[in-house]
Length: 449
Ligand SMILES: NC(=O)c1ccc[n+]([C@@H]2O[C@H](COP(=O)([O-])OP(=O)(O)OC[C@H]3O[C@@H](n4cnc5c(N)ncnc54)[C@H](O)[C@@H]3O)[C@@H](O)[C@H]2O)c1
Image (cartoon, rainbow, N blue to C red; front, side):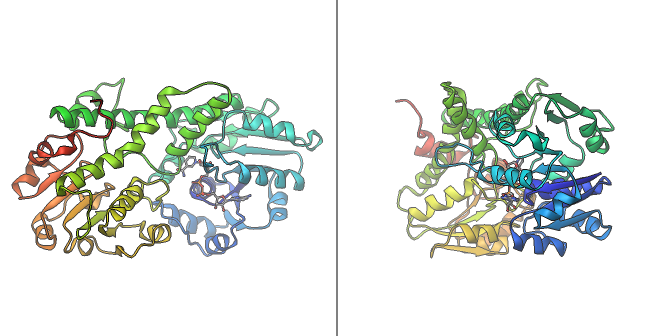
């Protein structure tokens, strides 16, 4: 089939490359001309494992091409997967400007078309858009929420747990079955529903996963207070099949371009319908506190709210490993907190350093291409993202480069006993270490006195 993909970001590029990989002929359109020029040369401006090789392979076999010309794509196919961004407005409401623009410009240039929205949109969006488009154009709008995870997006797209289709009543199921057949051949994991339910399914999925994270983060504070080990608790509950291990890691909180914005958008959308989503408000509130609680551990350890004269090395700034994406990454708030308290910060990340440079410029923040260079002469090392390369480091070497053998671990990746044996002060999340117990911070922000 010939398929158009609108928007060449994390979702659009993966969608276009994977559709082409499955034999479809795909044109990917974006309004960002620089991005399109780069993509035509087989290069991406984002990091996602396997993506660039898939892109090159499909450019070479002519199954994938890129365009900034709307007329070009409208003559190529009448199937359009819409993957433009839906970022948050200040109030939390989803900003649908790019979505509306892309859909109206397509509808002006074509007729008898199938528009399938992959962008995450508030429940009711497909119906609203359908009512706004000239009915004589015969354009159907369906919803196909995307569940890929950055860092494993290609793998997730090629082998999905499920495909959810919020089908426009006038569109046949066969269209979707044909498009997605290569991906669902094994387990027929395609579910059809109305557009409203499909839109809500995406928000429900992200909200539930974020709730698991905030649940663990809140319990980690309790564990800190009582001296329990949240990692043991995680093992103890995760083995229960009803709970499972995924998204049970306590840490600095969730970030990224989806969880924070989608939950806020759902809260805002429900608010418009006079419904107060109390649970999800708490999920956000707990998440918002998590970095501040961690910062308190740092100031508690150094016994001062003023961190002037101290240098911190931060390893990992992307919101999760295997991506260069730093949108709403907890590391950003942590770096700002440290800078605001007068500290010097030396940052290292395997992929996200360029994005960090664009996001924060500060005389006290430096960027390092090698982890140990960032650690050199620092008063402590902070783990903000759990990239695999941080797990098995040489602690003896680390001790020789750090000014003080102190590690603040925002992802609980090390064994407290090992670190203690190696002579480090190790401060982590919800796990009893000698140092944790000594610190004032065990009275965190939201404790009722
Ligand atoms: N990133 C994820 O992990 C993920 C996962 C699932 C769902 N989503 C949802 O998918 C959507 C896209 O997310 P993303 O991370 O790929 O965003 P992104 O910011 O990486 O990419 C969006 C792209 O759309 C382009 N664009 C903007 N206006 C356009 C227009 N009028 N016509 C054509 N292109 C236009 C931008 O130039 C950009 O390249 C969002 O709604 C997001 O919530 C994202």
